[in-house]
Amino acid sequence: MIARLLGTLLLALLPAAAAADGGHAEHEGAAPLGTGGTVTVQGYQVELLAHPSPLAPDRSSQLVAKVLRSSDLAPVTGGRVLVGFAPAGAALDPEPATERTWAGQYAIAASPSKPGAHQVRVVLAELEGRRFEPPLVVDFPISVARASSGMGAVAWTVIALVAGIGVLAISAVRLRARTGAPAGEALDLLRVRWLRRLLTSRALQPSLQIPLLALMAVVVLLGFYDVQDGGTNLATKLTWTIWWAGIIFTFVLAGRVWCLACPFGALNEWTARLAAPLRRLPKPFRNLWSSCSPGPTSSWAWSALPW
Image (cartoon, rainbow, N blue to C red):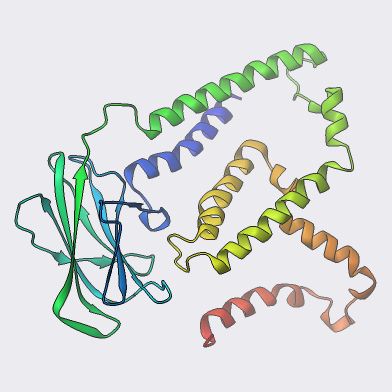
């Protein structure tokens, strides 16, 4: 039991440590930085971001220049962008920025040595095949905060997890004593009357699936109508950053409890029931190949065909 709890604690700490160290920056949203907001210049929007944010002395960060086309807010890829960073009043020497995984975001490493006022210069030398002579220059005044003396994300995560595991352990002991469960046997939650009535109710699963199905429809609409940028689109953040990570933790902590409420499973089950009289395929198609081939075929079509 103790080994299982410690293993769960370790698995839960891995993403927190990665976030604290700035790992997998391509999947984490960089926060807006500077007081200039979004600057528009010759048909392009330039926004300054930082990851992690805010900037702090002696902490490695990335300064990110996010470049969008003003007309449709599409990210501008394949450009030549330079970014310079220095204390206020010091000479700026912009260096070529590397385009990140999220298209239209150009980043350089930054590690300020002291707090206070700083400046960032973004130089647009070439975008979408257009070479600018002279280059387009955008300056952002920013402030570097003093280093925080409080506990970091990992420490707070450890405290929260230890407290949560302690509460669960105490609750399990009390429940075992109340239900008279024999020592050494697994705790049967169905011994609790109200919990048994809840879990065996026919209305439980639909009451969870229907609201989640409505929420899924909203997320799909956000994917189409929100900003068409993977780094800022709300549907991308809700699915890949929150939902997907949440599923991993539910598997570790509670098994397949998510499958009870999964809206995708609900759609599959309801469609199968409606199509039951029509779903008997001809005999040549009733095999493993017909069920497995649509996945690889659709993946090939997505990557190979000119959409």
